[in-house]
Length: 340
Image 1: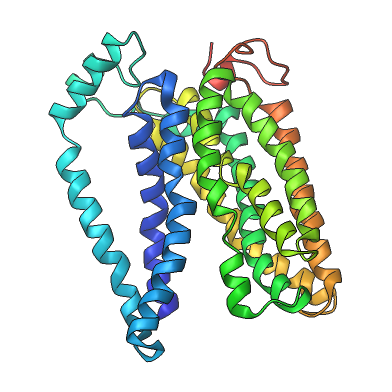
Image 2: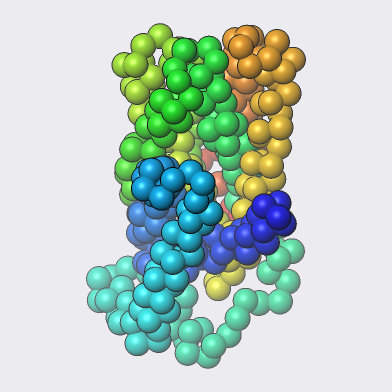
């Protein structure tokens, strides 16, 4: 039953993410969409950390035998948030946003006449998105980034438990330290991308993550190393997502941001789907849970995957904003990225 309900949850949560981010991208000025999506996506690591605190707290009150109560928390919270969103997201408020954006001398994500006409995306937008390197290549990069991210979250707890000598409870709690900088990093790098360009920012983030994942093998040295290295990794571990969403928002046809997001999230979840299985196999081939060899191989795979992502960004995408717009090195044209 858990598998069945997880299937239905995933079937709707995936499209939900594409629509959420599209709503944010089309609900803010183009010049500030990186910051807006950084704020939006900060909710992911902080929400993960909050859930990790709320569930144990509830179970400590009601007892482990009533574990099903934990599943009540999130539908109730979700319903409250959805009602507030439904009330706030209306034509009047969107028109106010449009006026404020124009008054501030910034660019609307969707032109006023398009909104008034109620026109949807133009025919053929899916095919155009698939041919756009700033969408399809970034979708591949997103899958790689999410592979490394999910592999890391799976890898961390058993590594701390079986190789670093922490109890299962302590390892579980110490495995979410990265969420502190994970949220702050998205806000900072999202704003940075607005000013200096999404491509430049993603290159910096990929290099940072190559180093960060490689250093994860040293978290067993001390509690200081465990916390410090996680905080270092967290600065960019989540930041790549709003930056990649900015790529899609800046490169999509008008009114077609959600289509590009959908392509990106499809590959993002595919990367997550294979991450845990592969890391599990590597650990098993390395001698099992109590042997460090498999864990070290996992670290090198995570770092190596980010090198692949870095090369794809450098050679097969184009800068969307900032001082390097139309001046960056790439093997693809501005026209193919819908940026001419």
